[in-house]
Length: 363
Ligand SMILES: O=C(O)CCC(=O)C(=O)O
Ligand SMILES: [Fe+2]
Image 1 (cartoon, rainbow, N blue to C red):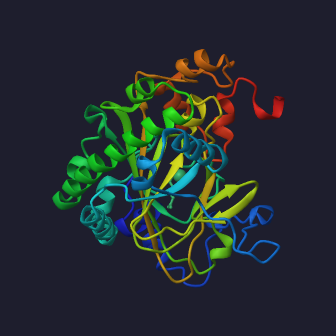
Image 2: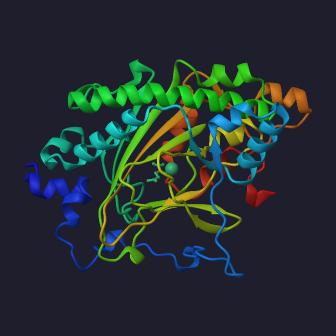
Image 3: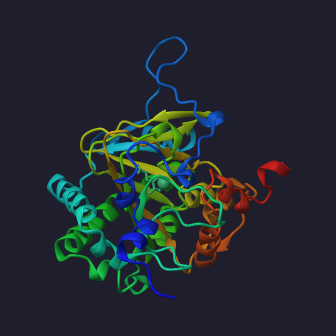
């Protein structure tokens, strides 16, 4: 079969291109409004400000007496599963450079971006929502997902083929953010009764790491589309960078969607499913989604920290022994956990339910 001209084939991968032609209406495959699920609080019933995602100032946290530090982290990880972090130690100039290079990447001509396009049956590369069924609705976004660690797991045509400045900046950024993530893993371990070394061994060095750059084009009908379907991350921790100061992330707390207003120089850190599993349910992975904007594009960059491919994902042994608790989640080798994760359509916390020994609807 003759290949499609670049113009047509690009639409399959690049909503950024397609959206330029849809100034008034949204093509049907992107219309996915669930009125039941649109409740976002802007002000609470009493008219006071909505609760906001907890803020962790790393400088303060490190100085806290150990018992206060544990209590603070344990309640944030349990009650929210998400926090903003400031004074995180990642160099501000590096973060600014990272933001600039990601924005530049999405400005490249579409032919350049298509060098990295997703291929059939693959989940790494540049493209739109991965379809599990033909009639599946598509999110209003272009994404670029790839595995970055361990090095041998990298796809040679992705990061290694990036424009050199983007590649070098990303390498430096990932190294710095990894240091922050390892500190957080250690502190969270202590807060939820997991042996610190057991936790660190799972994530350090050859821990599987991946990134996702996302571009949300402006949308003529933001009320009809979803930028990113509600989901929890499959990772241990995710460190999110909002690239261009346009808000849109929302997290679900007690059944209500709460907007996250990224503070200047802050990262948003999500607890992912792996930490919920390892902590035997003490940490809760946060369900989140992204809304889009009528006038402005939005860009984000997520870095996911996962266990080593050979490690078992399951409730931590030190926690089960120390507390005498029964495991509430199954154990699965990380490589099989990943296959299972990518075989499922993103859909709230349904994936995590598959890892529960007694799934929620059976309980
Ligand atoms: O765009 C965002 O702020 C969130 C991105 C996200 O949740 C993800 O990539 O998993
Ligand atoms: Fe996410």
